[in-house]
Image (cartoon, rainbow, N blue to C red):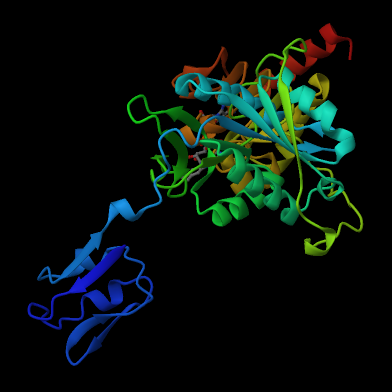
Length: 402
Ligand SMILES: Cc1cc2nc3c(=O)[nH]c(=O)nc-3n(C[C@H](O)[C@H](O)[C@H](O)COP(=O)(O)OP(=O)(O)OC[C@H]3O[C@@H](n4cnc5c(N)ncnc54)[C@H](O)[C@@H]3O)c2cc1C
């Protein structure tokens, strides 16, 4: 239990606390501050009171601290679409294996699907590292819908009590992980770019950009609430090796839900307009502010066509309106991990690097030999991109016979 106490003896009626409350829980009565039931015990008023008349007490023991060892294992949500497991789930299994090793526990998959698809999807999860795959099966779990997916996750988590649950920060993951977290009254850190186990406390350290990407915040869940849950963007972590010979166990549970309880029906699936798929591209040719105008992107397009690559851009080029946002690479754009990333006329700001620095090979073309991009480049070409890029395209055409 928490309690906010306003000392009537020392309150001077200065009213400083009233506007400080984000929930409008404070008002003045007979010249003194009073608090009502809207108070969330956030403590904002305590800090502003000039005469220290407000005290906040929190009984930490009242929190529903899980029994030691009650919650264990690392779980990864095995997402699938159009009959295939999404690669982000494999990437999370790879990272989950490291967390499970550091916690000395098991790595498990959490799969929801139509009974017909269980075998194939569970086998893929095992081949990528899952020791156990917990499956909720039901025809209701065919095409994705929030209600049955959230119910399936909540029921499985309540029954088997994982310590950590990881979701892809995809349309599905972002959509239902929040519902799961609120139903379970557990924390959820969205869009993580780094995960680690604190060696002393064994809590999950969840790192993500905060304040518009200007700082990286490492977030710990309150110990009284479990599981610890995160969503992670595709391509942040490396794919683990697939081993078809790996053995794993499948635990099947039926979904205790009927169609009447589901608030949505899938009438038709209409695919959105085809946009560039940067996340899955093996080669990306990106242009920055140095491109100068939309027309000049043709220079990069030629190299991209020759290499069957996708076209990327820095935020400077996107903000200038030369190329649409879905081409943007970086902290506020896409995170990519191609085999080859060409950075053409891009300085290499931290925000741009955040989205591409894990590319296997980085080729930087820049007039400025001191541009930060050269610090992470595998190959650096100091020169004018308008001369270098056409020469590269010409040479690749010749060598690839295109
Ligand atoms: C919260 C926040 C989020 C952000 N998110 C992103 C993001 O997601 N992605 C992103 O990219 N940025 C992001 N930014 C912006 C970022 O800080 C930089 O401003 C941006 O990346 C710069 O883009 P640039 O490298 O194209 O331009 P510049 O930094 O201006 O670099 C242009 C480069 O081109 C070189 N050059 C010029 N002419 C030529 C030529 N003819 N040939 C070769 N080289 C040439 C110059 O030497 C220079 O190095 C973010 C910023 C903030 C504050």
